[in-house]
Image 1 (cartoon, helix red, strand yellow):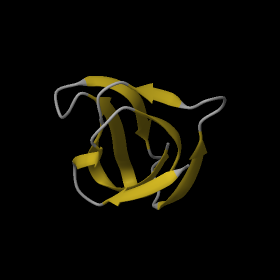
Image 2: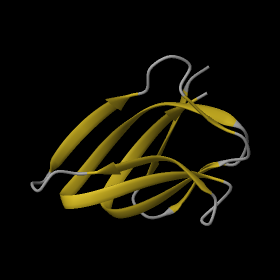
Image 3: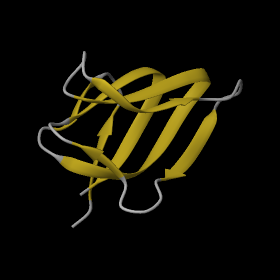
Length: 86
């Protein structure tokens, strides 16, 4: 089953092993989203830098998604993210 979680500040998306299937990112100019495996200081598995104007972007991850072995942690700057995982 695919689940979703939204974050407006940096923090945990999901606290166990999973695969990220897609994201919806809302941002102001140059916002960033970094998804890490292993908490705030973990390994970066996905990174997105928004364009120079505010907006929303849908990101679909191909295949089986991005594998996170321990957890999914989002580091956000000037962005809100909804992560689809499962």
